[in-house]
Image 1 (tube, rainbow, N blue to C red):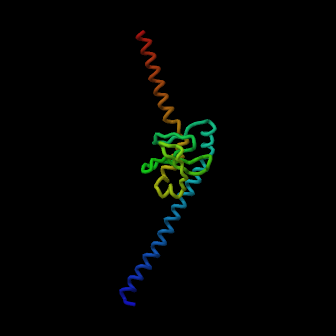
Image 2: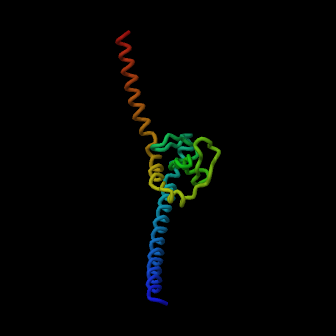
Length: 156
């Protein structure tokens, strides 16, 4: 074997070993994210059940969607599919926004790979604050309605 081939093989060995180390590190990070997501879902399970029991729709902190199935974890724009944790099935699904019967299973691993990890955690956390915006808006509307009534009284 020539010296040139030996150098190439040594380089390949080094690159392969580095690849294996990095791939293992990446997989461990993905596994950690999945564990965090599963633990967060478990943590918010009683809150999700409260939503269901009280027939409150699940909303997203920034998307204009609502669902009765479970929290909306994100939205895949390329496929026009909402990503939802289905409380009854205890798994993540995607649903086409224009055709809600078009439901597909969406593995946790795929959710992480597609970049929805942080959005999913924020969406689950939003379950705590779902009514905050509505309460603020209602208070503002009450103030406006009260002022309008006072103005009408002075006109009449």
